[in-house]
Amino acid sequence: MKHMFDNDILDHRVTKRRRYLNDLILLAACLLIAGLIFIIVRISGEDGSTVSVLYDSDIIYSHPMDREGFLIIEYDNGPEVRYSSDFDEKSYGGANADSDINVIRIADGCADMIYANCPDLICVHTRPVSRTGASIICLPHKITVTVSDDRNDPAGPDNETDAVTW
Amino acid sequence: MVKGRVQSIAYSGLCLALALILSYVESLIPFNFGMPGVKLGLANLCVVILLYIAGWKEALTVDILRVILSGFIFGNMSMIIYSLAGAALSFSVMLAVHKSGHFSPMGVSLSGGVSHNIGQLIVAVFVLGTTRIVYYIPVLILSGAVTGAVLGFVAGLILPLINASHGE
Image (tube, rainbow over all chains, first blue to last red; front, top):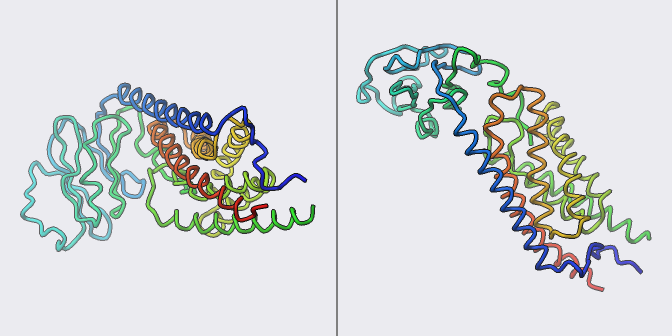
């Protein structure tokens, strides 16, 4: 009587050890492919010319990459971005500041989030962005800083998260 | 074999319930890469186990049901569509890998995880357009492969225990 719980693929020509080896080969192949694609994407990126700040997928500010300085985002009934040629960290009270704040430094063809008072500070830890399509996201403040060039529209359909699935 | 059917139904229900719990646990872990569909894929563990102990029909049923049900509970319609696409590819791949006989549960789960993410990526490419999405392929493959492998390893540990508990 065929037992329901038998592994009907219990084919002894392919031993268990061989199966585990195949698994590892498969895993290695996946990692390799992922690595290759990653390298290819890295190499083929191009530097962007414009830094755009988006609030909840709407562009609220655009700034040329070659104009160095700081973009200070404060929130007062909604986000407000202003440009400043310098930024003094000590003049802000950190987590005790009156309003939320994000500060982006534009320098050397890169945009970098250097200061924020969101709870997780992931945006500050994100590496500087310089290539078209790259972005720094501050999720708690709903800010996305993205790089584009004249051809690409930073607030195009790509930038909106239509859904989260699982 | 009535006894076989009853047990198969019982195990299916158990796996479906477990899959939903795992989906909930998954939703608590922030794992968002700004691209629809990046998730740990914990619930796939149940599908793999069911595939081994009960057969592909039961596993497919649970796979589809958990996508739809967890979509109703935790998400929305578009999410269900993405996940169904991922599950369709993932299940086909897992079944093929399983039937080939050349891989253990770890390999089956691993291939399921990767193909689930790839399936969702393909749908996203059609819906959103390609420019940004390409960045995420390596991450999707990596996360799908690693979580699939770990889950498959766990499945490999659980399956002999199930067999033993029915030891005849």
